[in-house]
Image 1: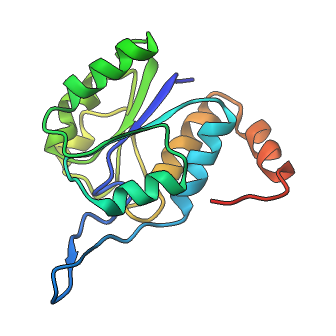
Image 2 (image 1 turned 90 degrees about the vertical axis):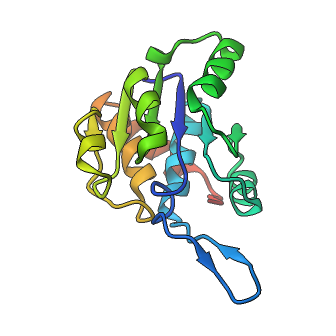
Length: 171
């Protein structure tokens, strides 16, 4: 199992679209399915880090609601930011899993121990990762990514039992 799960946002947790209304508000659409991916990671005591090139209050609010361990926004070089986090956690890239979907994710995808992308990512991204989700970004791809790792390690049923035993699931 990874010791850290890293995720991009736009194109993974969202469909990658940027919505603007006539008065300048920016909107993003998140799928509630991805919340379960965070819950599964929490049950396994695996911290989650969001690292994204965009910087919005929308993502900060979503991360806060889900009690995401680490949030890095406005990141131009994801490798540098993650290197600092890995030093803090005293782990290496091989101890990490990362899901991203575009050019600014490519170097990090190639450095981590387990990499994934969404089915709607460009072919040259899909060709560089260990796993391609069956779901598009914004349709629960992050959850599928986490579930896949748990299934591959043979612990999904155990984690699912723990989730079901929680009386109040707030995701």
